Length: 314
Image 1 (tube, rainbow, N blue to C red):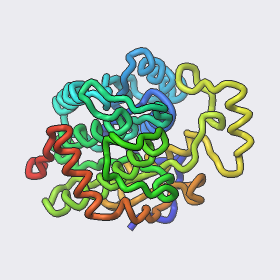
Image 2: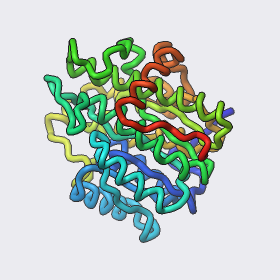
Image 3: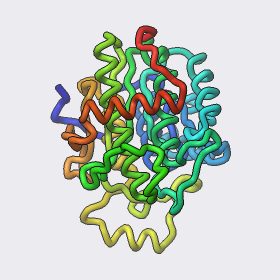
Image 4: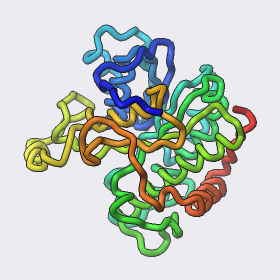
């Protein structure tokens, strides 16, 4: 059972641990990396842009000056592109055991009209869901060698808009908001289904879901190359101060879900007051806990990515 006491500013000693974070160059991904490095971990920071990853690594070095020289490394990874996912996964597998995988990357502000990826899939679903499904499945062996954990990024929106992901590719009835929320329903359902299947296979790997509440850039520390909101954004976001928090604090539930040894597979973590606050264990929306929905999304993800998780290898 998870401990009731947790200090986000003082993590367990993570010396010797290795974590991979997707979407590490900004927002929740960046602050998760910074917090992991403060705990002594080595972090593989992944993202699509070499320049933005370089800026993010430089920011970690500035803000955590006592970190080891090799505390971070860069990995080019575009979760919307299956070729990029395969290449990145092969690189990570060659580096040894992996203690944790934070599946954070994603599109938060979807396009107004439906777009498709190079592989022919709806852009938001591919980026937020399919790429992570393929990456996690391909890295099962590396996670298994370290008895590691994967954390999927959920959203409080799944408790407000209960979109049933029947048309995962949104061929009909596309809207940017539906694409986002539906991708989070699918992501959360996959996170819980992954843990059910891992347990059934006797795997030492666990799967957890966490959400960041209502975390906004305008209430987040300004960091060159990482978080540079305009004055307008600062003003607008601070008008909502009663119900929002910084992305630095939004990373707290993600990091706790990833490193707290008392967290259990199948858990769901988020801010105490849902939108903001210290990380606590919560109950996910019913639709995301449905085995029928999860099995449907799982089979669709296998078909779309061509990746079938080899549980026996863990």
